[in-house]
Amino acid sequence: MNHQQWKFYNVPIVMKFGIMGPGRISRKFADAVLRTEGAKLVGVASKSTERAKKFAEEFAIKNFYGSYEDLAKSDVDVIYIGTPNNAHYENMIVSIENGKHVLCEKPFTLSYDQTKDIFERASRRGVFVMEAMWSIFLPSTIKAKEIAQSGKIGDIKQIDSCINYNNLGGDNDRMFSKELGGGVLYDLGVYNLWMSCFFAESYPDIVKGVAELNSNGIDITDVLAARFSNGITASMRCGGTYFGNGKLTIYGTKGCVIMNRPFQDSHLIRVEVGDIVEEYRFEHPNGFVYELNEVIKCIKDGKKQSDIASWERSLKIAEITTNLLNEWASESNS
Image (cartoon, rainbow, N blue to C red; front, side, top):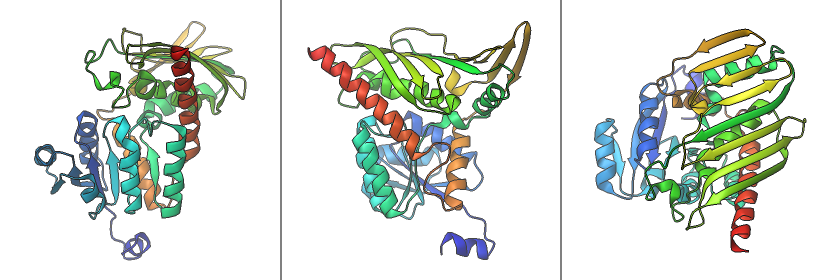
């Protein structure tokens, strides 16, 4: 029975979700599904059947699999991919080729070419695919953009953002593993880029960057500068070796909007115009709920992509990260 038939008989649509990779990030997604009306977790897959089973028991998931392909061939509607970065591309391929809609964690893939290929496959198969950039769906992010574009702070001139964690889990952390597709640009810098593009409502025509690479050639501290096609500039910092302020600030000709730490999940927006200060507080215990609602709405409406987290935006970000990483690798080898 297709979605149109469901609507005809006035039967509530419950979207069936499956999870690939029962790791830390997938736990947050599973909790979000439990909080979301119209969504149900019905399957989880891991390369380890035991891990899948343990995860299934914790979240009361009916089916668990020791193979990603088995999940892709099951009766789930949407597959959430929370595997390590290096596995995203192949996990999406098996999901799409089995006719499943896909929500894939960032970084979407490890290159522009892989990202382009995924969207071409999704287009051919007629399935919905979205990069899980949850932060742009948060009420705090939407409010910050609304204020910035209202004229209250004047014309937007610059966006400054910082996302940093001090060494995370140490040298053995997934983020520092070349084999697993590590690097702070993939894991953290994408937040800087996505949010800057979101607020600027444009894409950079120039992006310059410098990075500190570790002995394995993985970027562990990055500093980026960008100029957008509409003249707005951005400074972006990300790192896994030091403590940063974690804020994002939108500077205008009259004032500024500040998203407090951590800006990718901010619960406090501060607006400063001269001596006048306004604050807006937000409560969202699990920010993944908002991107999940977007996925469900888009699929119910028959869309293949989100207007907000569009394929174009994922491609633009993938192009930027690919070019920067290639440039840094070339410099380190020279």
